[in-house]
Length: 283
Image (cartoon, rainbow, N blue to C red; front, side, top):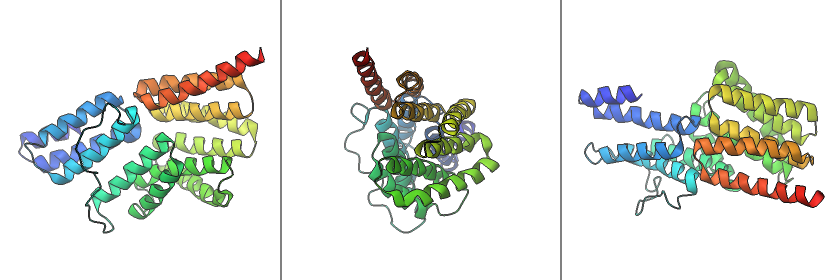
């Protein structure tokens, strides 16, 4: 896609070039394929180019992406840009509007990673309308996070009626994995691990947590490798296996450091500190 951008710009087809840029940035966010600070600089480079190559749609889509990356790094505390309008504000609300649909996707994605369950649920429902057809990458990706979010809610016993919806997400992920194993195998395994953990089926849960970690590593999804380690850590913490919890949380922290998410690194650090205190008190 970067080669396509360079070729399109050199041939005078800026619109095609920036279409490739949008896809390049979106895929980098979804796959965790680029360290977040480097990705932020790359987005800023393209936004700078757009001062010459005018495209309002591309600018707003890149601002959506930039906000997501900034929030994942440090909640925008030192990486946000000032005086920018909300990237989805003023967008046409008709179904199929690209800017609004991607705004919903980014909000669902952001809120899941930042731990805002209700907001994630709200925007995931918006995405279900925006991306209704099975097989669409953005829709399938959001449903994965929505499924994890629902499982978290079930653990807290806040919405037991949504178990059927979890089963539907797992069924969808099985189909997705059958067509694109390297993209979706780890997601399916993590959803199933979380469900088995919820049902206290220990041997199946631990096997699938490790499988999800291995699959994410093989696919080079460093953020989802970290997520699988994090979920395994919480599972072991729940069953009071402090040693394994500590080990998986350490693995999660290493993944999140490589990804460049200071927010998630700090979150895991607090969990590790809590386990250290617990361990010292039991000595």
